[in-house]
Image 1: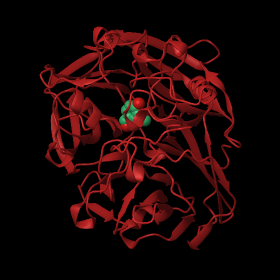
Image 2 (image 1 turned 120 degrees about the vertical axis):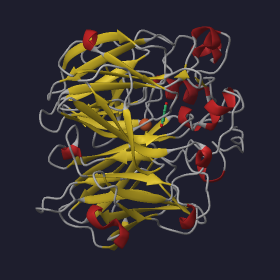
Image 3 (image 1 turned 180 degrees about the horizontal axis):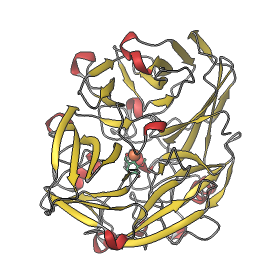
Image 4 (image 1 turned 135 degrees about the vertical axis):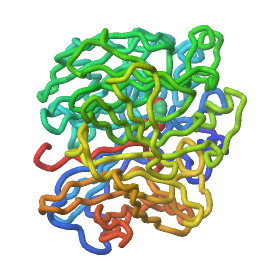
Length: 479
Ligand code: V55
Ligand code: FE
């Protein structure tokens, strides 16, 4: 008999595990779904099968579920399925959790020592004709894009040497290539980082390794038409701590932040390291090169936001006290020195996204999320505590902001962007609205260029969709 999950931030309230695999054909839609919206939104959801073996754990250890919303001719169908990882299968057979702390294999049940422990729970991408579910602690898992059946690990036909692959890859809209990296590429807590490029057909054409200044949680990176950018912030790992049964990550504010920049077709030997005080960021909206200057846009804060990492580091900082801002960092490659310039573009936030066509180049508009106290009280949703309740549209040159909040007892999940074929049309933003007072979900669809006008369609979901992590829109033509 499965015992109750602990009543903690990560497993209680709206964050309660769902464990529901389901299919709903033709969801009820209020409003109108534009006919041109044709394709599928895939989203990764951590959703633990069993209560944590060690009594508590973090939300981001949850078994990978993939959810899809397929839009076709004004209709929308929902499906979500577990990824049948080796870990998922082992636990299913045992009918209990066998794996210990987040990314510490030394804490696992002896029955699964040395066995794969990745849950592939962070981002689904579609590249080279493959649907891949990613998590930064291991390789990709390939899934059937129509049925979500688990097909097996994808290691680029045995060519990928890195043991890991980031969940934040960078597709080039012009060449169709996929830029990515893996950190802890040579094993647990190593400083090895692999820089990789897959061609438009999904074949690995390049992999080159370098050493990071220290072993850091390098969750995302950025690529411009000319450069690759590797930010390193001081959330760090240590092998001795892992061997002693400790946590993977601690926040070390006395260490500096580093940003490595290299010509994207150059060699890692050309990496130039910039250096500044401790900062934290998990996601970058976009980056571009302008002459000798490289710009990087993202939500930046002064401490790591994850409660389980803060706890292990002996601190407790409310996100509102974390000094967060949405910023542009500008690196001038023509000047000597290690520093960069910071320009504030907007309020604190995360989940940044620009239109896929705007990636890697100078651009006008991006979208991200914030918590606005005027739009509702803080509600726990997802891995860092209070979830976001507001979507922002940011004009990056002027700093002009438009906003949308569903209001009431609601939070929002990561938005996806659907391009429009109509000239001058900015496309659409879709996202799940978590209705905390009803334990139910809805999907809102907004015109990206007019989010303040509210949803043009509300897709009713007859159950609670557990808070997911990242997703991607895949146009129908690509599938
Ligand atoms: C994040 C999420 C993860 C993870 C590491 O959003 C960082 C940040 C869902 O898993 O393993
Ligand atoms: Fe992420």
